[in-house]
Length: 213
Image 1: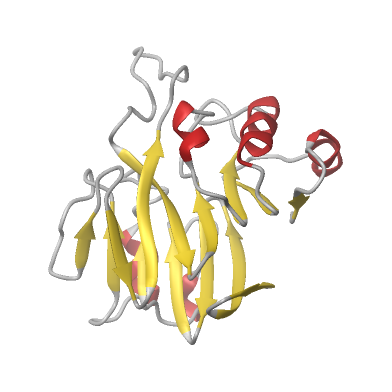
Image 2: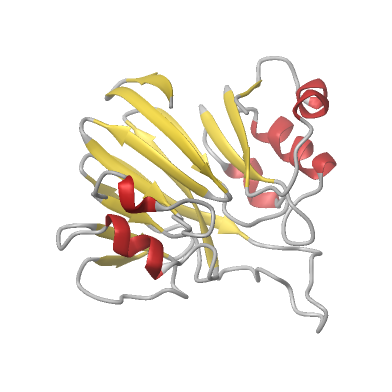
């Protein structure tokens, strides 16, 4: 796990693979898009919160949930997941909530160009979420499944970003670098990738951005 200093204390981050990430702070465990095909979550700590970006099977995975959820686990999800039960908070793009003192805003996450064989966008605008988590001023951006989009220009100052990098669903390496250099986080993870050339990505980043992979 990697650790980052925030005004709320130490933030510990573990990337399991694909889009699955664990954040630990003040004893709370926050999982994002846990996916059982890349990790067996049976041995992981129970979740206090599970964030879901959208309802595709590799992001909304009930098998993974069953390993880590408890009756007290909260969920924050996109509209296409919906309110499954009373533990679920549904956020549309640009909606905000606070969980255990952490500000969470749902932001745009969508395709502009990438389409399936029938011509439909893999991730239409307004359906899925990215999230910005605000740890009392230290801001973490989980981009979800997206391409570089105009709304990235409107993001607040991001300290730690997670950007996807896989075809045909999200970004090429060049688009990943374009998005990263636009957002300019201090720390950056590539996630949701099939393969990665870390030296090439590092060479394409603007100074001041540290690739954590």
